[in-house]
Length: 410
Image 1 (cartoon, rainbow, N blue to C red):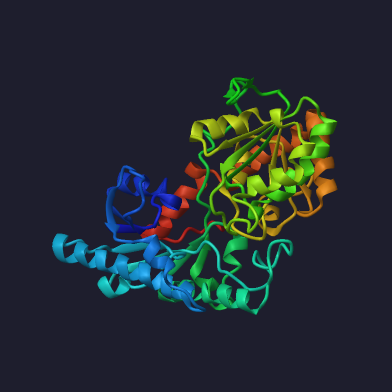
Image 2: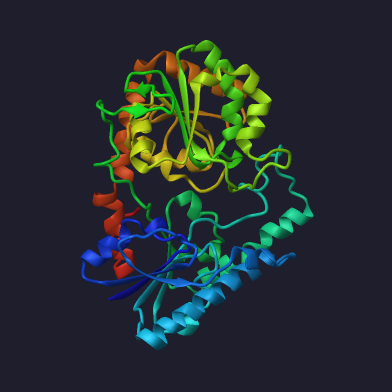
């Protein structure tokens, strides 16, 4: 078949799927934004897009208008693919979050349309009213959130089928659309992401960390309240005072996260260091920023305790990869996490906002790694069972794209 994959930051969730489809003999083309600097081993077409132009769109309907702006640009690029190059896909599989697929059925009406259904926004009960410290669920904010739903609903209505990575994320969509959605996780390469007693991580100061060292790890794309950065930072003074040999290693950059930047500081790192930095031994707190994947993997492999927090939102890949790496997990008692692990079985769970609880749980896990060993083994086993890329997730995703239905419930 001819298959078009659509993602503004390709490969994104199609990292493993694109080469697997090519290996099965399909012709695979990706449509992405011209600002995407990645160069994966897939034929790429780009649509013209300007963040500055999109940012000019304001008002209550800005969410849909911005998505339609991007969707129009993607559709025009698609028409050129059709008219100049004769490309007519059998299947279009696109992420529904940015509007890129909105008008593609006007270019290729016969194509089978598949949607990646990552999350449906809600004005209450999910991320937007979870953290009262940084969120004000007033009428204006609810209008903005509601306006962000419109293009996603249209994309789902126009789709022939959809896939969500977790049951929690699928459940954020309206009941009327659930029959279209299959739950298939993107998958983790557990042959690569695994415990490694030979792993080493070199810190910027030259210190080399190894498995067995007292390392507390925290990883996210950005240091952001959505992923509990503020909670962890507030828990650290007590942890570091109790554990004077602990090294805290944080991965993530200072860019605009899911919830935006703070109003009173240039970044969340700056804001939280202003709040708690004078109570921390900063020689033992290491902010690595964005790191190459092998460095990130080494951090998971040398970690004694890995902290993962999230609002009721998208489950981060790093959570499942930490499980596959056999990390000793201390994680937030929020719905996305509770789908992946059970308290006392694969992880220790702590209420998201319980700062003393986080300090106590992290300190205890650092102090007594032997008590966490059964959880490490169970986390790795669950990753193999539920999230393994090669044996489970990728075959199911290939069947989804090729139009077959597996009997196994995912």
